[in-house]
Length: 312
Image (cartoon, rainbow, N blue to C red; front, side, top):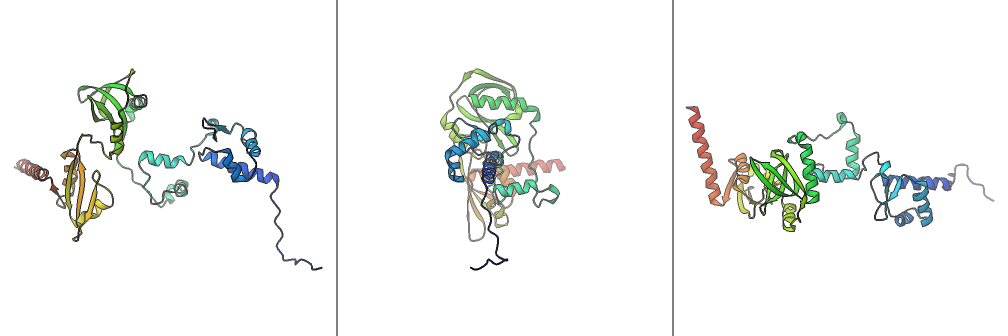
C-alpha cells in the first residue's frame, strides 16, 4: 500500500457551519450598508440555502439591524444608518451634476479617491464659483416644500409683486433659479432676488405636463415659447474649446476641411448668445441670422465710441 508523500499538500478542511453562517451574515450586512434593498429569495439563491434559513437570518439574527420596507424588501433599519450608504455617492454626483468629472465613474474608483489623504491624492478639482445662499436657507426650504406640495406662491421680484406656480429649483452657472409659471407663462426667477415669499398652503395647482417636459428637456434657464436657430463659424485656433464640451444650448458641430467648425445652436434670446461670441472674438463669427451679426457689430462700434470718448 503506497504511502503519501510528506510533501503532499494538506487537504483543506470544509467550512464549518459557524463559518458559513458568519460569511452569510457578513455578506448580507455588506449589501445592506451599501444601501441595497434585498429580496429574500435572491439571498436564497446567492447563498444556496433554504428560505427558512434566510428568514431566520433576517427576522432573528439581524433583528434591529434589518427591516422590511413597504415593498416587502429588506433594508438597513433607520436606527442602524450611522453612515451614508456608498451607493448614494453616484446619486449625489448626479444631483450635483458632477457624474462626468472623472473618466472612471466606478464606485471603487470614487472610494479610492475619498480614502486617499488629500496631500497624497493625485487629483484635484478646482471649485466653480457659486453664489452664497446661506442667508436664504429658510426661503429655499419654503420653495422646495411649495414645489413638492404644488402650492401657489406670492413674492416681490425686482420691485414688482408676483403670483407664481412653482415647478423646479434649478442650479445653473453657480446660481439658483426658480422655474415657475406666471400668468400662464413659464419664467425663471433668481432665488437670491426673491423677497417677501408667502406660500399659500390652501391654494394648490395641478402642474402642467407640457411645462414639466419643457423644463426636463432644457439645458439652460432661458424660458421662451420659441427659439432661433443660429449658425456660427469657429476658427481652427479655438475649435478644440467647442468640441471638448458644449458651450451653447443644444450645440452640434461639423468639422470642415480647414479645421474650422460650423456650429449649430438654438437660442432663446440674442443676449444669451452675444456674451459667448464676444468672449471668443475674433475667432467666432455669427453666420445666421445676419441681423444678429449686425447687432453684434453695432454693439462693438458703440463700445469703441464710448471708450474713445472716455480717453479724451
